[in-house]
Length: 207
Image 1: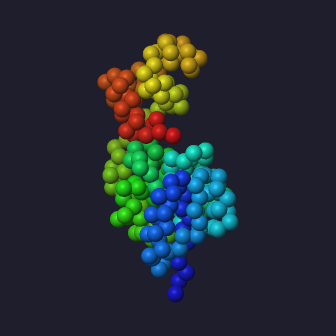
Image 2 (image 1 turned 180 degrees about the horizontal axis):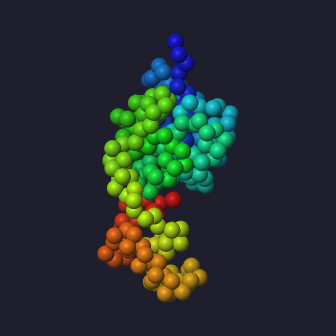
Image 3 (image 1 turned 120 degrees about the vertical axis):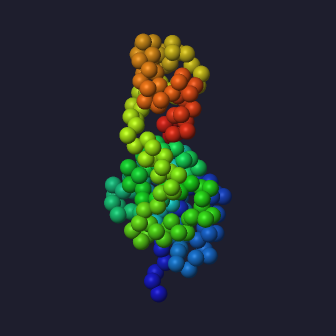
């Protein structure tokens, strides 16, 4: 009898953790060895437990999922991390995979995909749902927004005028206009509102 796959679950929602715990306890080849509610706790538990597979929420207070994956992978390059998120934007997926995740699951898929994903990544495979893979492929050659452009767009998303954005970021109004021109071009947007909608859908303004 081979030893069960040891799983660490990292999520700040108790219902989510309970649901995953319930799903795993019915599987003879899996064992939930630990649960963490944020990134700092996840890193401590990973060091202590050395799980085979870690399920990682992206949106958490404090140290978010991406930063936690990076921290774990720095210390344990062979760690197998599967991202759990409600968010299908390609930017979030791209960041998670660059950070070292080997699986990416929407929380709406957990009922049908969780157990097979754990087995796949434990066996050395990767798991990215087709709809996310196609989003990634669609935008792979697109220009990413710079950190400053994201800051400008975040201010614009709050309904601020160019003048207020300029004051908030301590730059000139002309600089804001230049950033907006670049943002519209990179996102293929018609106007400011359209740019904000596209950026939200793709995950630029998330986390």
